[in-house]
Image 1: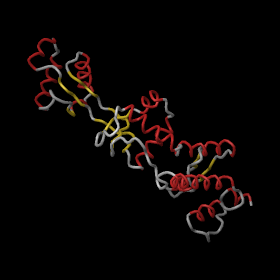
Image 2 (image 1 turned 120 degrees about the vertical axis):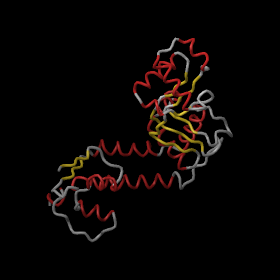
Image 3 (image 1 turned 90 degrees about the vertical axis):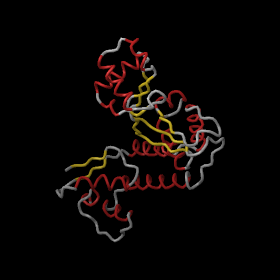
Image 4 (image 1 turned 30 degrees about the vertical axis):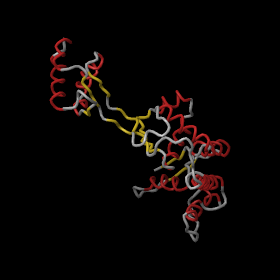
Length: 262
């Protein structure tokens, strides 16, 4: 098997884990790392800024996100919001990658709880009283569906209810048609991001060294170790890897590019 790394991983831990997949079947395998010194060094160093943007930017993302979600100062605690990142970044004119990173940093700092790929279940609320439905000239299928919903979900007139029936494709189309006529409010199943407020919105933020600078320095250290591994051509690759993980008395492997060249 041949396993090719087209992009330089962020760390030797990631590289070691990914390269190890090539030999899981017990057969002879080759792990190849494609490395362009100029381009890859610029790319991987840009990841530092993308992953740990300046503190001022993180604070700006916090306040712009609060404004986008219409959360006032001193409020929001305990509330959960669906967050469409494309809309947030477009409306608030924010760069996507750095905004994701900023929200994760704010989560680590305890201000919010940001989750990617959060799935919401379909929800329905009936807006028209039962005795007025006859005025809408509904189809038999629409009437039967409304009857099922009204019998199954007692609070469906007062607030949105999670409905399992919407998982059926035909039922979904019926719900869409009812929503278009204003008979129901229908929020289909969707996958996006969610943001929970673990604190009330604050005016000033504090990102401690343990949350920001120390994590940033560990990330930079791992990237530098990855770059040194890719650039060096004097020592056996396996020895370098094992030394990184603390095993400093390994013998040359005899089959990496450095060993073969020697």
